[in-house]
Amino acid sequence: MPSVVGLLEQHELSARRRVEELREEADRIQAELALAEQEWNEWAIARSRVGAVLAAENGNAGVEAARKLRDAAKPKPQVPVWREGMAWSVLSVDYQRILQALADRHRLHQGPLTCQEMAEVFGMDVVPAKVEALRSKAKRLVARGWLAERQPGQFTLADAVASRSGDGS
Image 1 (cartoon, rainbow, N blue to C red):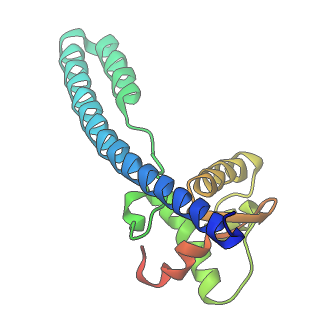
Image 2 (image 1 turned 180 degrees about the horizontal axis):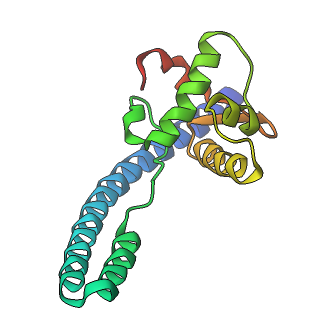
């Protein structure tokens, strides 16, 4: 009969193998995502150029069509899942600003921030639309492992991110 410790070691080994498999798959998916984003950007450029040509040929109607094409082709901000060694620079400026505000609070040993407090820190009008936009971004950062929300509506850096916040990555 196997020992309890032996059974635990078997389960731990199995779990470790699964984690390694998933990491390899995540790396493959990340590389595939980078290629897809590059292709997307190339198509966005092509669409923008077609819009500019249409605008030049069709006057004001063409300008409006070009604007719609340009806006549709704009890449939306992406928030990658945080991994060890990932720099903040992979995030858009808005997301970096949230991380910086929370890193400053972490460095000063202050508590979490609510989205309303973030809006105040950023000098924004504290109105529902602005606060909800920040909440959406903060929730996205939580879902991707950059932030933690230990109490509803109160955000801090995730522990792993906080341990590296001194070097901006």
